[in-house]
Image 1 (tube, rainbow, N blue to C red):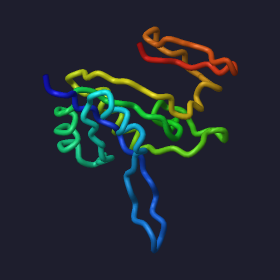
Image 2 (tube, rainbow, N blue to C red; image 1 turned 90 degrees about the vertical axis):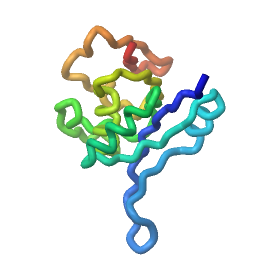
Image 3 (tube, rainbow, N blue to C red; image 1 turned 30 degrees about the vertical axis):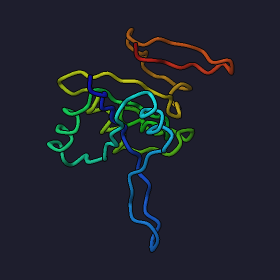
Length: 144
């Protein structure tokens, strides 16, 4: 049986003038963990302006691993960015969203991103979410 190909959306690392161009990055630990459990990790570039290439990438994936990272941009779910919201990466949000909404569903596993929205939720989650509370009293939601 072939090993599953699991996509990992990269993150944007902004340029440092004179030292480093704009980059897409991902922590090695995620890649190593997927490899160690028998998957073939595939780093997904944030080509938001190239739907055809992104479709080709998604069609080759058996699953998507949603990593931790910066806050989800509130505009992704129709909310303004509040002062408590940290750094965001809209291109990453768009690529992850399109991977999850593609026509042929694929498996997904996720790691918590900095969940700024657990503090102020203006619209209740749909019933397909499982809610939990951490020992610190923070509420989290998980897609089931």
